[in-house]
Length: 198
Image 1 (spheres, rainbow, N blue to C red):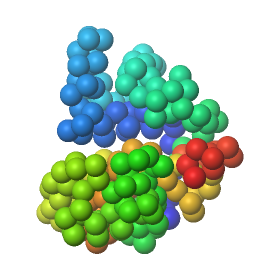
Image 2: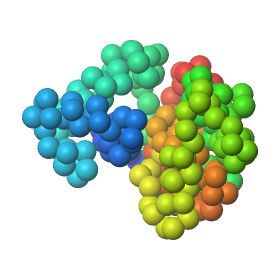
Image 3: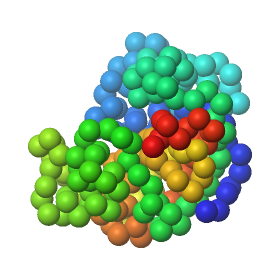
């Protein structure tokens, strides 16, 4: 792991929302929320983390869409004292990252929550809950063409045992492509993260 520097909660929120904005699954709801709140997409596509008002707007958006800071949804029981770090993980380190303990990702990976296992099942034509695998395949092709993805957001009690918080599709694309490159990440660690990211 190559540490790039200290990150922040505001940067994580901006990165999280930026990643979901391009998601076929979450992007539409996020755009609707942006419009309803009277915000332009540039709040997410060109985030300025030195702007307190913009940070508060993004925090409210992540609370509304995912329960951040409200102890619900994706962020139920999420620690409040997280240290955020910007880093680059080697291909081998990325291969060791696990999916969230969520039914779809557990099923896709055959119970292991390992992206390499999910990739093998996708190649074999297996689906989780009959959800099409084409988005993973398309993303892996984009990766091999040299497209750059937003950073993954990973969490854990320590930096050597990490779970994907945001970026599961991109993580799976890396696995399908055979983990061809190092990967930029934001890593959140906390003493009480072990239970949440087990």
